[in-house]
Image (cartoon, rainbow, N blue to C red):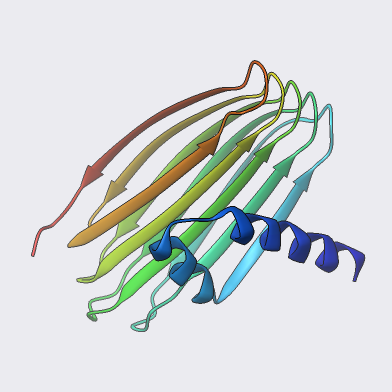
Length: 168
């Protein structure tokens, strides 16, 4: 229960600092999620795939906490494949510890006829470097709401995303 309490504290802190009404609404819709905690000084690569073939609205949540001095390469894929008119809302929270170097490659593929709303929040500690590359494709309507906290000394955030929509 200690891990659940720590996660709940983190989510409450994020909600307390959130000022976007759409993001707050989307937080209330979260239906399932994953919390990944990476130890300090880690050097690793991993892939996360979230697949959905449901015809109802789904709302996955992913939180990644990277410890100090970690070097992490992440491939994160969200794949939705169905023909029903529905939507998907996803939330990504990433915390980068002191002197960490995080490279996130994100792919969002939507085979349905609905919409995809995404919120991404990045919190960078001192001298942390986070680089995000993404391709978001297939939805009729998409909204990507991204916010990075760069208040720590030496924090660096690079963001490059391509959206390709079907159109309505």
